[in-house]
Length: 229
Image 1 (cartoon, rainbow, N blue to C red):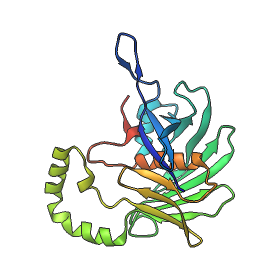
Image 2 (image 1 turned 180 degrees about the horizontal axis):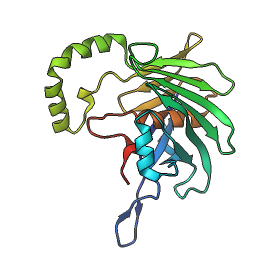
Image 3 (image 1 turned 120 degrees about the horizontal axis):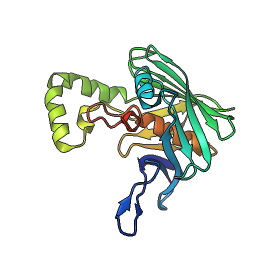
Image 4 (image 1 turned 120 degrees about the vertical axis):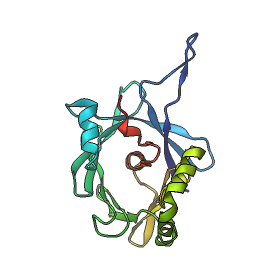
């Protein structure tokens, strides 16, 4: 049985008279094991550098990312932190650290045509475990998508009208493979990360789904961490 993780907006608390009041932390990671209901397993927030939001947004253009996974919306307990080790020239390396700074795992993103292939490559390595390599989109669907480039302007307009943006985005499914197995999978429908391997640290899976959503659709400005406030 796989564990399914996805990112979503934080639940809103009902105020007695003023109506809904937004949570102090704007995003959460939800987890589902089997057919049961989802539950919140982490609250997500950017970890800003000394220069604040402007410095963060300037650095993210090179691939730099940093965020915290909190155990609760009031930031009382830190579950994990994602930090950038290096970023530039289309390749970015990240570490996921536990509450006491211990290494949970690493991610490496190699942008298409800038790293080691025609597709964006993601490498996930749990601490003490084998690395798993995944490529964004299946080759077949990229071969279908690229010939549509002459009509991309029309596709973008239709996507904007639908309020979705998926039609204008390329194939996004990722299947990670390690030693002949597929321990991880990202499904574009629902933007969910599936942990197929038993014993995989859910904090690593939660950090993975969050960082993937920072490389979302430029079309509608969906990247949660690129907010100006």
